[in-house]
Image 1 (cartoon, rainbow, N blue to C red):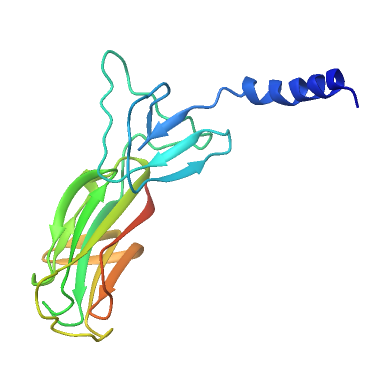
Image 2 (cartoon, rainbow, N blue to C red):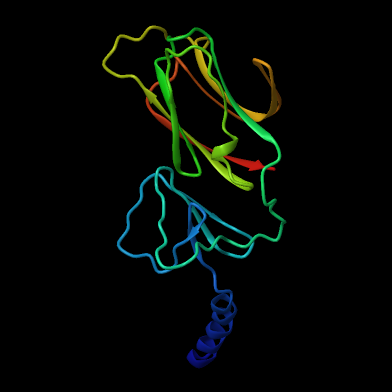
Length: 198
């Protein structure tokens, strides 16, 4: 194969790729042309159209002088959320896991869930947007203290799900996110979950 023939083959292969006009999105916001930025602890995903979707907990993007452009999805996204979403914590034994959790929803800090707190039951619907959401937990092991336990039975668990409140009770119909750490675990950890609000 001649050099010219190889060059023409390469051009034919490159043209369709360039014509796709893919974009880069950071936490759902288009950031084409972004330069001089470094972000740690990010995950990347390529959607069906070849767009690059970066998920970076703790980072937000402010767009000046224009509307925020979201990636286009073929599936219809509801204009508002009709369901209710609740967060519930559970302990194997309160204050023994030595873990605190920072909760982020769509890269915005919501609250810290502490090891020594009694059970927390709270609605998180207002922190969600219709359609796709990213829920991130940053678990921090308390250092510099003598460990209270090494047992996996001493857990700290968080559940987020669809449900309903009646009086002083909350019933979760479907658990959508479950995250836990135990006293047997060591070190910090970060985990992301996809949650579709409807």
